[in-house]
Structures are given as structure tokens and as C-alpha cells.
Length: 110
Length: 216
Image (cartoon, rainbow over all chains, first blue to last red; front, side, top):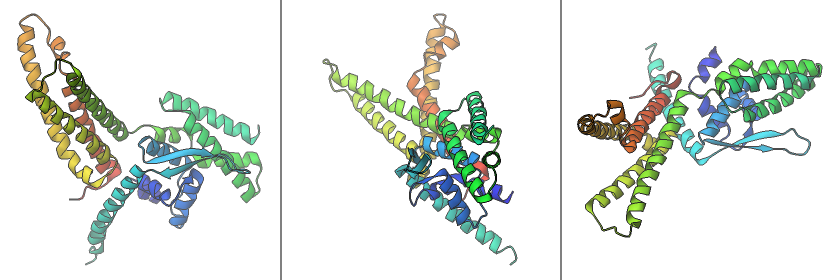
């Protein structure tokens, strides 16, 4: 439930952020999100891939299949220029939103 | 039944469900299979269970077919954004084509009306850029988008209504039905109206999607 609430409305931003520092495949995105959130976010792969495909349709990420020797075939996703702009906009919105929430909740006991 | 059979059976169910939902099948199924093979191998290594058991756990972790298909369904916002972008491009192409064919006509002589059309083409092109950037999350374009689309939509609606009223008065007198008259409406104004409604819907949905609070 807590994860569901945390993900609500922010999945796209989290996925864009996960590929912002370099291209990643789906499995690595799930692991990155879990590591960055100290294990709080465990995204189901069945939710991740449709979301990545939607972001690709919107031109925010670009995916391509890679097959390294001795490894399984994987689809690697990278951020596009359009995705960079969208991520910057979503970060700004989040900063403004969290500032408002901190101001409201921070004063809840005052 | 081995682990490959289990994963193949899941892939077949997923493919059938995606077909029923009208969503592209192969990209998602290929990726699901690649993920399940990798996850099953990791589970088998980490937990020392059989490959079949590892595949079962990997499938359970991936999510049931219904959940995956629900996540793959195109949401209204994405569809509206695509409609707004496509109508913007079609509009720009139609206006540019009109200008090009006018200027290429050997009998063409400069008219004030032509300058208005060139201005209109520039406005339509600028709108297409603002719609594309604004719906992709661009900050400046995002602020410009709502007023631009409202003005655009009102302009298109006024032209459509004006045209329909004048055409109705003329055509009804010679026996045409209202539907027949409506079908003669200028497609360009209709496209502008669709662009505005779809763009505003997509913009609003991106602000309020999943319960996001709008900030003043």
C-alpha cells in the first residue's frame, strides 16, 4: 500500500531518473529503484515494461536490444533529449510540491 | 513441463490478452520472456531451487497477465496527446500545401490574403511546436499551452459556427439537410477544434493524473 501510494503519479519521473545517468535494462532499473529507496520500492516487472513502452511511444526514452557475449539478450533504455526536458520539468514540479507539503506538514504540530 | 514451457505458456497467455486489448504484442512479450528467463536463472542460483520452481516464482513476481495488460492499456492522456500532436502536424501540412500550391500557380499575383495565409501558417507551426513541447513537459511551453489552445479552440469554434450558420441558410433553401450541410464544414477548423480539445484534455490530465495536486 505504501509503495502504491509512493508510486502514484511519479512512476514516469522515477523511470526517467533511473535512465538519466546512463542507459539501463529493465532488470537494472528495478534494482536501481530498490537500491536508491533502501528497498522501499520494489516495482513489479509487469508494471515496469508497459510503462517503459509508453514512455518510448511518447519519445521520452529510446530502447534497443543488446546481446553481449555470455549474457542474455536485453533491451536497454536511454533518455532522449525530450525525456531530459520532461525529467527536468517533473523535478521542478516535485521540488515545488514537496516545498508546499513540507511547509504544511512541518507546521502541523506548531 | 520444464521452465521454458512454463515461460512459453505465460508468453502465449500474455500475447492473447494483448491482442484482445488491441495493444502491440511482440515488443512486450519479447521483453517479458527475456526478463523471466533472467529472473528465473537468478532465483535458481540464489535460492538453489529447481528451474521449474524458479520459473514459477519469476512468473509470480512479474505479475498476472491481467495486471500487465491493464498497465499496457493506452491511457486517455497519452491518446489525447497523440491526437493533439498529429492534428497539429496535419494542420501545418494542409496550410503549407495551400500556400505552396498558390505560390506555384503561374497566374499567381501577390494579394493581401496571401500574406494572411503565410501568417496563419506561421501561427499553426508555432502552435505545433508549443503543443509538442508543452505536452512533453517543457516548462515555458507548458505555461503557454492552455491560453494558446483556448484561443485556438474559440477561434476554430467561431469560424465553424459562422460557416455552418451561413451555409445552412444558403443550403437549406435549396433542400439540403442539416447533416449534409454540417459535412461540408471546413475540415481545417474542425482539425483546430480537435487539436484544442485533445491538447487541453492531455494537459489537464498530466496535471491531475493520479491525484497530483495543482500548485497555485
